[in-house]
Image 1: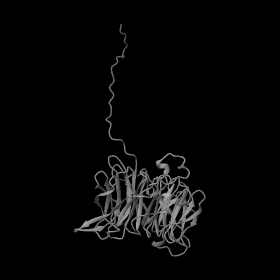
Image 2: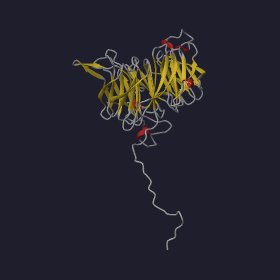
Image 3: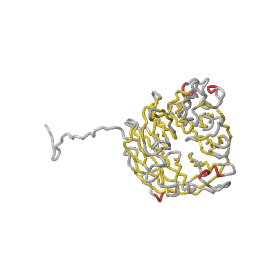
Image 4: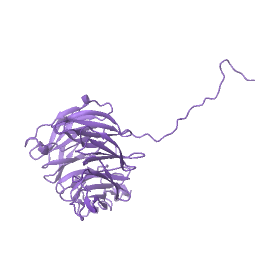
Length: 430
Protein backbone atom coordinates (compact mmCIF):
# COMPACT_ATOMS: atom_id res chain seq x y z
CA UNK A 1 0.00 0.00 0.00
CA UNK A 2 1.24 3.41 -0.93
CA UNK A 3 1.00 6.14 1.61
CA UNK A 4 1.05 9.80 0.75
CA UNK A 5 0.32 12.98 2.59
CA UNK A 6 -1.01 16.25 1.44
CA UNK A 7 1.57 18.18 -0.51
CA UNK A 8 4.07 15.32 -0.45
CA UNK A 9 4.20 14.56 -4.12
CA UNK A 10 7.88 13.94 -4.91
CA UNK A 11 9.50 14.33 -8.30
CA UNK A 12 13.06 14.19 -9.54
CA UNK A 13 14.99 17.47 -9.41
CA UNK A 14 17.18 18.37 -12.39
CA UNK A 15 20.25 20.50 -11.56
CA UNK A 16 21.95 22.38 -14.34
CA UNK A 17 25.64 21.63 -14.79
CA UNK A 18 27.60 24.63 -15.96
CA UNK A 19 29.92 24.01 -18.88
CA UNK A 20 33.57 23.66 -17.95
CA UNK A 21 35.74 26.22 -19.71
CA UNK A 22 39.43 26.99 -19.66
CA UNK A 23 41.08 27.27 -16.26
CA UNK A 24 40.91 30.75 -14.78
CA UNK A 25 44.04 32.83 -15.21
CA UNK A 26 45.84 33.83 -12.02
CA UNK A 27 45.35 37.45 -11.04
CA UNK A 28 48.31 39.41 -12.27
CA UNK A 29 49.04 42.83 -13.64
CA UNK A 30 51.41 44.79 -15.80
CA UNK A 31 52.48 48.03 -14.13
CA UNK A 32 53.91 50.86 -16.24
CA UNK A 33 55.18 54.32 -15.36
CA UNK A 34 55.23 57.31 -17.69
CA UNK A 35 55.36 61.10 -17.87
CA UNK A 36 54.94 63.77 -20.52
CA UNK A 37 58.32 65.31 -19.64
CA UNK A 38 61.02 65.02 -16.93
CA UNK A 39 59.40 67.93 -15.07
CA UNK A 40 55.79 66.76 -15.46
CA UNK A 41 53.90 64.71 -12.90
CA UNK A 42 54.22 61.03 -13.65
CA UNK A 43 51.53 58.41 -13.95
CA UNK A 44 51.37 54.78 -12.87
CA UNK A 45 49.12 52.61 -15.04
CA UNK A 46 47.99 49.18 -13.83
CA UNK A 47 46.88 46.89 -16.66
CA UNK A 48 44.80 43.74 -16.31
CA UNK A 49 46.59 40.69 -17.73
CA UNK A 50 43.50 38.86 -18.93
CA UNK A 51 41.66 41.77 -20.54
CA UNK A 52 44.44 44.12 -21.73
CA UNK A 53 42.53 46.96 -20.11
CA UNK A 54 43.51 49.80 -17.81
CA UNK A 55 42.32 49.12 -14.27
CA UNK A 56 43.80 52.07 -12.40
CA UNK A 57 45.86 55.18 -13.09
CA UNK A 58 47.33 57.38 -10.38
CA UNK A 59 49.63 60.39 -10.21
CA UNK A 60 53.30 60.12 -9.21
CA UNK A 61 56.10 62.59 -8.58
CA UNK A 62 57.82 64.43 -11.42
CA UNK A 63 59.42 62.36 -14.14
CA UNK A 64 59.40 58.80 -12.74
CA UNK A 65 62.20 56.80 -14.33
CA UNK A 66 62.62 53.60 -12.32
CA UNK A 67 60.04 51.11 -11.04
CA UNK A 68 60.64 48.45 -8.42
CA UNK A 69 58.36 46.00 -6.63
CA UNK A 70 58.21 44.90 -3.02
CA UNK A 71 59.39 41.42 -2.14
CA UNK A 72 55.86 39.99 -2.49
CA UNK A 73 54.98 42.01 -5.62
CA UNK A 74 52.03 43.74 -3.98
CA UNK A 75 53.72 47.13 -3.56
CA UNK A 76 55.37 49.36 -6.13
CA UNK A 77 58.12 51.96 -5.69
CA UNK A 78 59.24 54.63 -8.14
CA UNK A 79 62.28 56.86 -8.32
CA UNK A 80 61.46 60.31 -9.68
CA UNK A 81 63.56 63.11 -11.17
CA UNK A 82 62.33 65.52 -8.48
CA UNK A 83 64.26 63.44 -5.94
CA UNK A 84 61.23 61.73 -4.42
CA UNK A 85 60.34 58.09 -3.90
CA UNK A 86 56.72 57.06 -4.39
CA UNK A 87 55.24 53.95 -2.83
CA UNK A 88 51.85 52.45 -3.63
CA UNK A 89 49.86 49.27 -3.32
CA UNK A 90 49.36 47.33 -6.54
CA UNK A 91 45.60 47.12 -6.30
CA UNK A 92 42.49 47.67 -8.38
CA UNK A 93 41.26 50.10 -5.74
CA UNK A 94 44.36 52.30 -5.78
CA UNK A 95 43.65 56.02 -5.61
CA UNK A 96 45.98 58.93 -6.24
CA UNK A 97 45.57 59.88 -2.59
CA UNK A 98 47.06 56.49 -1.69
CA UNK A 99 50.35 57.26 -3.44
CA UNK A 100 52.79 57.84 -0.62
CA UNK A 101 55.89 59.97 -1.11
CA UNK A 102 59.25 60.31 0.59
CA UNK A 103 61.95 62.79 -0.44
CA UNK A 104 65.52 61.59 -0.47
CA UNK A 105 68.27 63.48 1.30
CA UNK A 106 70.22 65.81 -0.99
CA UNK A 107 73.49 64.70 -2.50
CA UNK A 108 76.42 65.36 -0.18
CA UNK A 109 79.37 65.54 -2.54
CA UNK A 110 78.03 67.36 -5.62
CA UNK A 111 74.81 69.12 -6.61
CA UNK A 112 72.12 66.58 -7.43
CA UNK A 113 71.89 66.09 -11.16
CA UNK A 114 70.48 63.40 -13.41
CA UNK A 115 73.91 61.73 -13.33
CA UNK A 116 73.88 61.17 -9.58
CA UNK A 117 70.21 60.68 -8.83
CA UNK A 118 69.34 57.20 -7.48
CA UNK A 119 69.88 54.55 -10.11
CA UNK A 120 67.81 51.60 -8.84
CA UNK A 121 65.54 50.37 -6.06
CA UNK A 122 65.06 46.76 -4.93
CA UNK A 123 63.27 45.25 -1.96
CA UNK A 124 63.76 42.61 0.67
CA UNK A 125 61.08 41.60 3.16
CA UNK A 126 61.93 44.45 5.54
CA UNK A 127 63.58 47.19 3.49
CA UNK A 128 63.90 49.03 0.21
CA UNK A 129 67.49 49.48 -1.00
CA UNK A 130 68.27 52.51 -3.19
CA UNK A 131 71.61 52.96 -4.95
CA UNK A 132 72.65 56.58 -5.31
CA UNK A 133 76.01 57.81 -6.64
CA UNK A 134 75.73 61.20 -4.90
CA UNK A 135 74.80 59.77 -1.52
CA UNK A 136 78.25 59.88 0.07
CA UNK A 137 81.82 60.86 -0.81
CA UNK A 138 82.20 57.90 -3.15
CA UNK A 139 78.67 56.59 -3.35
CA UNK A 140 76.33 54.64 -1.19
CA UNK A 141 73.03 52.94 -0.62
CA UNK A 142 70.03 54.31 1.22
CA UNK A 143 67.88 51.84 3.16
CA UNK A 144 64.22 52.77 3.52
CA UNK A 145 61.32 51.24 5.40
CA UNK A 146 57.62 51.80 5.96
CA UNK A 147 54.73 53.49 4.19
CA UNK A 148 55.43 56.17 3.38
CA UNK A 149 59.02 55.07 3.11
CA UNK A 150 61.44 56.69 5.55
CA UNK A 151 65.21 56.61 5.59
CA UNK A 152 66.44 54.30 8.36
CA UNK A 153 70.13 53.89 7.48
CA UNK A 154 72.84 54.53 4.92
CA UNK A 155 75.83 52.40 4.01
CA UNK A 156 78.88 53.45 1.98
CA UNK A 157 79.75 51.41 -1.10
CA UNK A 158 82.28 51.64 -3.91
CA UNK A 159 82.41 54.54 -6.36
CA UNK A 160 79.35 55.15 -8.53
CA UNK A 161 76.95 52.43 -7.34
CA UNK A 162 74.53 51.55 -10.12
CA UNK A 163 72.52 48.48 -9.13
CA UNK A 164 71.66 46.22 -6.19
CA UNK A 165 71.15 42.46 -6.58
CA UNK A 166 69.02 40.38 -4.25
CA UNK A 167 66.30 37.73 -4.21
CA UNK A 168 63.42 36.94 -1.89
CA UNK A 169 64.81 35.18 1.16
CA UNK A 170 68.43 36.12 0.46
CA UNK A 171 70.63 36.76 3.48
CA UNK A 172 72.44 39.63 1.76
CA UNK A 173 72.30 42.15 -1.06
CA UNK A 174 75.15 42.95 -3.45
CA UNK A 175 75.65 46.58 -4.48
CA UNK A 176 77.46 46.95 -7.81
CA UNK A 177 79.77 49.93 -8.11
CA UNK A 178 80.74 50.82 -11.64
CA UNK A 179 83.55 53.20 -10.64
CA UNK A 180 85.44 50.80 -8.37
CA UNK A 181 84.52 47.50 -10.09
CA UNK A 182 83.23 45.93 -6.89
CA UNK A 183 80.21 44.20 -5.39
CA UNK A 184 79.62 45.29 -1.80
CA UNK A 185 77.87 42.59 0.24
CA UNK A 186 75.48 43.92 2.88
CA UNK A 187 73.76 41.58 5.35
CA UNK A 188 70.00 42.15 5.30
CA UNK A 189 69.52 41.18 8.96
CA UNK A 190 72.08 43.56 10.44
CA UNK A 191 72.59 46.13 7.63
CA UNK A 192 76.35 45.71 7.87
CA UNK A 193 78.93 45.28 5.12
CA UNK A 194 80.34 41.74 5.21
CA UNK A 195 82.58 41.74 2.13
CA UNK A 196 83.73 43.79 -0.83
CA UNK A 197 84.20 41.50 -3.83
CA UNK A 198 86.20 42.51 -6.93
CA UNK A 199 84.30 41.93 -10.18
CA UNK A 200 84.95 42.78 -13.83
CA UNK A 201 85.16 46.17 -15.48
CA UNK A 202 82.13 48.47 -15.22
CA UNK A 203 79.56 46.16 -13.62
CA UNK A 204 76.14 47.33 -14.73
CA UNK A 205 73.50 44.74 -13.79
CA UNK A 206 73.10 41.43 -12.03
CA UNK A 207 70.72 38.67 -11.07
CA UNK A 208 70.57 36.07 -8.29
CA UNK A 209 69.44 32.47 -8.66
CA UNK A 210 66.07 31.65 -7.13
CA UNK A 211 67.72 29.49 -4.45
CA UNK A 212 70.09 32.45 -3.69
CA UNK A 213 73.16 30.19 -4.04
CA UNK A 214 74.75 32.03 -6.97
CA UNK A 215 74.84 35.69 -8.03
CA UNK A 216 75.72 36.73 -11.58
CA UNK A 217 77.24 40.15 -12.32
CA UNK A 218 77.25 41.59 -15.85
CA UNK A 219 80.48 43.47 -16.56
CA UNK A 220 79.80 45.90 -19.38
CA UNK A 221 83.45 46.84 -19.86
CA UNK A 222 85.07 43.40 -19.81
CA UNK A 223 82.54 41.32 -21.79
CA UNK A 224 82.01 38.73 -19.09
CA UNK A 225 79.88 37.63 -16.15
CA UNK A 226 81.33 37.37 -12.65
CA UNK A 227 79.94 34.48 -10.60
CA UNK A 228 79.64 34.95 -6.83
CA UNK A 229 79.04 32.04 -4.47
CA UNK A 230 76.34 33.78 -2.44
CA UNK A 231 76.52 31.30 0.41
CA UNK A 232 80.27 31.64 0.89
CA UNK A 233 80.03 35.36 0.06
CA UNK A 234 83.03 35.15 -2.26
CA UNK A 235 83.92 34.64 -5.89
CA UNK A 236 82.79 31.24 -7.11
CA UNK A 237 85.57 28.80 -6.30
CA UNK A 238 84.23 25.57 -7.74
CA UNK A 239 86.25 23.73 -10.35
CA UNK A 240 83.70 23.77 -13.18
CA UNK A 241 84.72 27.33 -14.03
CA UNK A 242 88.41 26.55 -14.04
CA UNK A 243 90.14 29.70 -12.83
CA UNK A 244 87.24 31.03 -11.37
CA UNK A 245 84.85 33.47 -11.44
CA UNK A 246 84.03 34.66 -14.95
CA UNK A 247 82.08 33.48 -17.99
CA UNK A 248 82.74 35.11 -21.37
CA UNK A 249 79.81 36.70 -23.23
CA UNK A 250 79.47 39.19 -26.08
CA UNK A 251 80.92 42.64 -25.54
CA UNK A 252 78.86 45.28 -23.71
CA UNK A 253 76.50 42.97 -21.83
CA UNK A 254 73.54 45.11 -20.83
CA UNK A 255 70.79 42.96 -19.23
CA UNK A 256 70.04 39.39 -18.16
CA UNK A 257 67.21 37.15 -17.11
CA UNK A 258 67.03 33.57 -15.88
CA UNK A 259 64.97 30.59 -16.92
CA UNK A 260 64.93 29.37 -13.35
CA UNK A 261 63.54 25.85 -13.64
CA UNK A 262 65.78 25.22 -16.67
CA UNK A 263 68.93 26.45 -14.89
CA UNK A 264 69.80 28.87 -17.68
CA UNK A 265 71.09 32.45 -17.62
CA UNK A 266 70.36 34.56 -20.71
CA UNK A 267 72.61 37.59 -21.24
CA UNK A 268 71.87 40.27 -23.86
CA UNK A 269 74.98 42.02 -25.19
CA UNK A 270 75.13 45.02 -27.51
CA UNK A 271 78.36 43.84 -29.15
CA UNK A 272 80.81 45.94 -31.14
CA UNK A 273 78.75 46.10 -34.35
CA UNK A 274 81.05 43.71 -36.23
CA UNK A 275 80.53 40.35 -37.87
CA UNK A 276 82.79 38.69 -35.28
CA UNK A 277 81.14 40.40 -32.31
CA UNK A 278 77.52 41.11 -33.18
CA UNK A 279 74.78 42.00 -30.73
CA UNK A 280 73.83 38.69 -29.18
CA UNK A 281 72.15 36.63 -26.48
CA UNK A 282 74.39 34.17 -24.65
CA UNK A 283 72.64 31.25 -22.95
CA UNK A 284 74.65 29.84 -20.04
CA UNK A 285 74.16 26.64 -18.03
CA UNK A 286 73.81 27.46 -14.31
CA UNK A 287 72.94 24.03 -12.88
CA UNK A 288 74.35 23.23 -9.46
CA UNK A 289 75.32 19.78 -8.31
CA UNK A 290 72.34 19.46 -5.99
CA UNK A 291 70.02 20.36 -8.91
CA UNK A 292 71.20 17.36 -10.94
CA UNK A 293 72.09 14.58 -8.49
CA UNK A 294 71.22 13.29 -5.04
CA UNK A 295 74.70 11.91 -4.31
CA UNK A 296 75.22 13.29 -0.81
CA UNK A 297 78.91 12.42 -0.81
CA UNK A 298 79.61 15.21 -3.30
CA UNK A 299 76.57 17.44 -2.86
CA UNK A 300 75.62 19.48 0.15
CA UNK A 301 72.43 21.44 0.62
CA UNK A 302 74.33 23.98 2.72
CA UNK A 303 77.21 24.42 0.28
CA UNK A 304 76.16 23.35 -3.21
CA UNK A 305 78.81 22.85 -5.84
CA UNK A 306 78.62 23.52 -9.55
CA UNK A 307 77.66 20.74 -11.90
CA UNK A 308 80.19 19.76 -14.53
CA UNK A 309 78.17 21.79 -17.06
CA UNK A 310 77.96 24.92 -14.92
CA UNK A 311 79.22 28.00 -16.75
CA UNK A 312 79.20 26.37 -20.17
CA UNK A 313 77.73 28.30 -23.09
CA UNK A 314 74.69 26.50 -24.44
CA UNK A 315 74.19 28.89 -27.36
CA UNK A 316 75.22 32.32 -28.57
CA UNK A 317 72.44 33.82 -30.69
CA UNK A 318 73.18 36.82 -32.94
CA UNK A 319 70.69 39.70 -32.91
CA UNK A 320 70.74 41.08 -36.44
CA UNK A 321 68.41 42.42 -39.10
CA UNK A 322 68.68 42.82 -42.88
CA UNK A 323 67.96 46.08 -44.68
CA UNK A 324 68.62 46.64 -48.38
CA UNK A 325 70.47 43.35 -48.58
CA UNK A 326 72.88 44.40 -45.81
CA UNK A 327 73.02 42.77 -42.37
CA UNK A 328 73.02 45.12 -39.38
CA UNK A 329 73.17 44.59 -35.63
CA UNK A 330 70.28 45.36 -33.33
CA UNK A 331 70.89 47.44 -30.20
CA UNK A 332 69.38 45.36 -27.36
CA UNK A 333 68.34 47.10 -24.15
CA UNK A 334 66.62 44.40 -22.06
CA UNK A 335 65.72 40.71 -22.19
CA UNK A 336 62.98 38.70 -20.47
CA UNK A 337 62.16 34.99 -20.36
CA UNK A 338 58.81 33.21 -20.29
CA UNK A 339 59.08 30.92 -17.28
CA UNK A 340 57.33 28.08 -19.10
CA UNK A 341 60.63 27.74 -20.96
CA UNK A 342 59.19 28.36 -24.40
CA UNK A 343 60.61 31.73 -25.45
CA UNK A 344 62.72 34.74 -24.56
CA UNK A 345 62.20 38.29 -25.83
CA UNK A 346 64.71 41.08 -26.42
CA UNK A 347 63.83 44.77 -26.68
CA UNK A 348 65.88 46.36 -29.47
CA UNK A 349 66.08 50.13 -29.19
CA UNK A 350 67.80 50.56 -32.62
CA UNK A 351 68.20 54.38 -32.57
CA UNK A 352 69.10 54.64 -36.27
CA UNK A 353 65.79 53.07 -37.35
CA UNK A 354 62.37 54.82 -37.37
CA UNK A 355 61.20 52.37 -34.68
CA UNK A 356 62.71 49.59 -32.65
CA UNK A 357 61.58 46.00 -32.39
CA UNK A 358 61.44 42.91 -30.20
CA UNK A 359 63.32 39.72 -31.09
CA UNK A 360 61.50 36.49 -30.23
CA UNK A 361 63.82 33.58 -29.36
CA UNK A 362 62.65 29.96 -29.37
CA UNK A 363 64.32 28.32 -26.36
CA UNK A 364 63.91 24.85 -27.85
CA UNK A 365 65.98 25.61 -30.94
CA UNK A 366 67.86 28.62 -29.48
CA UNK A 367 67.17 30.73 -32.57
CA UNK A 368 65.46 34.03 -33.33
CA UNK A 369 62.12 33.08 -34.88
CA UNK A 370 60.58 36.51 -35.41
CA UNK A 371 61.26 40.23 -35.18
CA UNK A 372 58.20 42.08 -33.93
CA UNK A 373 57.65 45.79 -34.70
CA UNK A 374 56.62 47.87 -31.68
CA UNK A 375 55.93 51.54 -31.01
CA UNK A 376 58.94 53.81 -30.49
CA UNK A 377 62.45 52.71 -29.54
CA UNK A 378 61.88 50.32 -26.61
CA UNK A 379 64.11 50.27 -23.56
CA UNK A 380 62.15 48.12 -21.09
CA UNK A 381 60.37 44.79 -21.46
CA UNK A 382 58.55 42.38 -19.12
CA UNK A 383 57.29 38.84 -19.75
CA UNK A 384 54.65 36.68 -18.12
CA UNK A 385 53.64 33.13 -19.03
CA UNK A 386 50.01 32.12 -19.49
CA UNK A 387 47.47 29.85 -21.15
CA UNK A 388 46.77 29.87 -24.03
CA UNK A 389 49.28 32.69 -24.53
CA UNK A 390 51.94 34.48 -22.59
CA UNK A 391 52.27 38.23 -22.87
CA UNK A 392 55.17 40.61 -23.30
CA UNK A 393 54.90 44.29 -22.34
CA UNK A 394 57.15 46.89 -23.95
CA UNK A 395 57.69 50.60 -23.25
CA UNK A 396 59.69 53.22 -25.13
CA UNK A 397 60.91 56.64 -23.92
CA UNK A 398 59.75 58.25 -27.18
CA UNK A 399 56.24 56.76 -27.30
CA UNK A 400 53.04 57.01 -25.26
CA UNK A 401 52.21 53.41 -26.23
CA UNK A 402 52.52 50.26 -24.14
CA UNK A 403 52.84 47.48 -26.73
CA UNK A 404 51.45 44.06 -25.72
CA UNK A 405 52.84 41.04 -27.58
CA UNK A 406 51.01 37.70 -27.49
CA UNK A 407 53.57 34.89 -27.33
CA UNK A 408 51.31 32.41 -29.10
CA UNK A 409 51.43 34.43 -32.33
CA UNK A 410 54.28 36.92 -31.74
CA UNK A 411 51.99 39.76 -32.77
CA UNK A 412 50.81 42.97 -31.10
CA UNK A 413 46.99 42.70 -30.97
CA UNK A 414 46.68 45.18 -28.10
CA UNK A 415 48.18 48.51 -27.08
CA UNK A 416 47.61 50.83 -24.13
CA UNK A 417 47.86 54.63 -24.14
CA UNK A 418 50.04 55.56 -21.15
CA UNK A 419 49.28 59.31 -21.40
CA UNK A 420 53.02 59.95 -21.27
CA UNK A 421 56.34 58.63 -22.53
CA UNK A 422 56.95 55.11 -21.29
CA UNK A 423 59.69 54.89 -18.65
CA UNK A 424 59.46 51.32 -17.36
CA UNK A 425 57.16 48.31 -17.17
CA UNK A 426 57.09 45.29 -14.85
CA UNK A 427 54.73 42.36 -14.28
CA UNK A 428 53.58 41.06 -10.89
CA UNK A 429 54.15 37.44 -11.97
CA UNK A 430 56.47 35.82 -14.47
